[in-house]
Image (cartoon, rainbow, N blue to C red; front, top):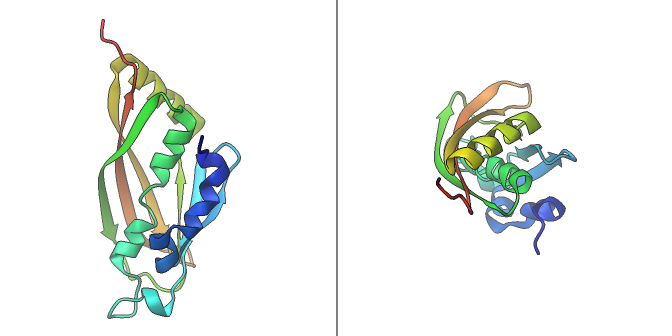
Length: 152
């Protein structure tokens, strides 16, 4: 069986990430925090010399989903449902983003879904430049469903 926790570094070889310069920086041992970065390269600049907006979003796409999938386990279905990115300033040089869901929040999600069968959950992060300036704000909505939920 494929283990996301053991194979997360393979994301660095995923063609869309490899081709756009996105790379995994770190994952904590609890698999509740993931950090990624996007280095500015000649091949990922747009017409005005900044990071493509699509690349900035791509670096934020799967990580909240990965955290929930790994921590909730195989009895839960996790899907991205909606996303919004607000660009605040041009992305120059290296940008980074960190995705974190606390163990407490994961337990709340699990409890809610165990009681209700499913739910939508919203998470926020920022894409930051090298000096900590906010390049973009990202909102992700994830749908979580318990596979074996039975209504009373």
